Image (tube, rainbow, N blue to C red):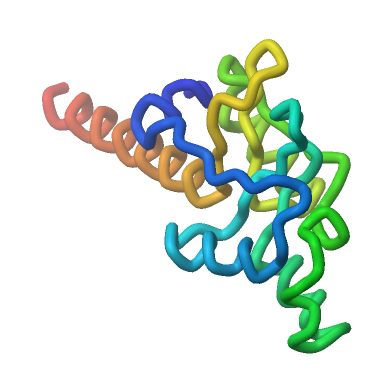
Length: 143
């Protein structure tokens, strides 16, 4: 199963914010869209980071409520790990586990084309294993 298959099913919409947006802006966006992370872009639409709920909580724990006025670029995770649409789900799961991230922006030819979460990948993996088990069961019954 490829990343592109997941994007075709779930859609390619990606929540993004500008590097100058505040943590309060990010928290509102995450809450409104009921998502766990937002991709941070610069003025040329280049990915500069990913800001997760976890990043916000850690910043609030360190700085208190005043942290909500800080720009996302001061808090976001940099060195973003991405996926390609043609990549296999298993390689993405492995990378997410190794790097302890829950979201991978999907990039094709340098352009942001979607985002996948570990939940998306686990859902597809379970679906695939279930379908395989049902096919084996049907095969055995027919045999």
